[in-house]
Image 1 (cartoon, helix red, strand yellow):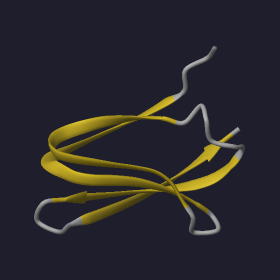
Image 2 (image 1 turned 180 degrees about the vertical axis):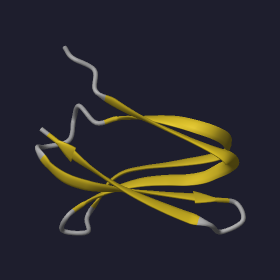
Image 3 (image 1 turned 120 degrees about the horizontal axis):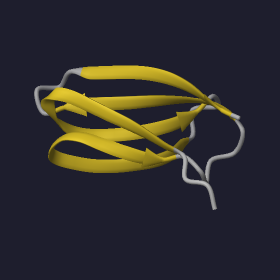
Image 4 (image 1 turned 90 degrees about the horizontal axis):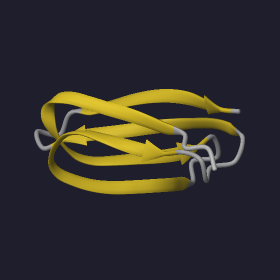
Length: 69
């Protein structure tokens, strides 16, 4: 089985990381609390466009888009 991962890192502690499909449905979530990085296994996701939402404990939110082929 092929492993497909996305690695996120930040200079601040990430509090939560979520993945949404283009329809706005949450496909994956993790409450990281004290980690400055995390890996998301996207192998189970269907082909499509997704948005990653990462929030730090100060309330700052970052969004990134990726395409799963």
